[in-house]
Image (cartoon, rainbow, N blue to C red; front, side):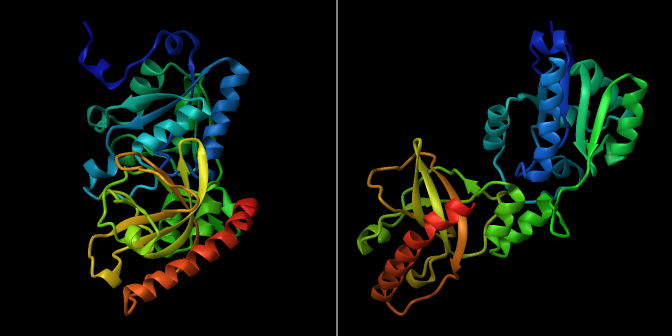
Length: 313
């Protein structure tokens, strides 16, 4: 019979036998700073025949601590997929059961006893334990006493700016999508289920897919973007409008994407849309005919820019 504390993790025998190289962090967005932490853990795991591990929280720590959570850059499901694609074993972490652990208890009960750590990596600004009282320096000190190797990775800079999830959120909300993508080290993307719209795009001759942002997900600056859509294993150039479509007096905010060169029914499917470049703001046109003309111009611009942006990205 499992003890109460065992509900926190579901471990396999390989972790218990080989030991682990753990990448510590929340990793929202898995940006270039996060990648440095993660690749260091993968490097040490390969050299020392350890299992590379990342813990994923079942709830954002700030939600329980302060009730306020920054909007997500990556859905939890997609984050797990990316980490597994990188080669990590993802361990589900029940934050409620450990939120009152002191820094020492977190290290002893989680890092040592549960995860059998041999190597631990984290970012320079990592905090842990009740109230976030533990930091990267204390983590290194306490792990050293237990014979566990640890690495605190320095911040990654873009120019004179530190790459962080907070800065990337700000850039996305300001429409600075290209700079956000550079900080991310990949294209900002979402893969929400396609829902039925009002059929306006089809009526205008430009069929679109409608996707709605979850309440806790980052919403980009309203406007029209050069984008890329993945259908199955194939990528297509696309044009995406994020906003409320003021010309047709709709107040339902959404992502509406015209996938160039694709024809088919995608209702009910999860389609990944990546935003590549902010093209223009959302405009209220005097008529549907004017809107149709502008969409046609946007598509021509997107076709012209797509290869250039992809090849330079």
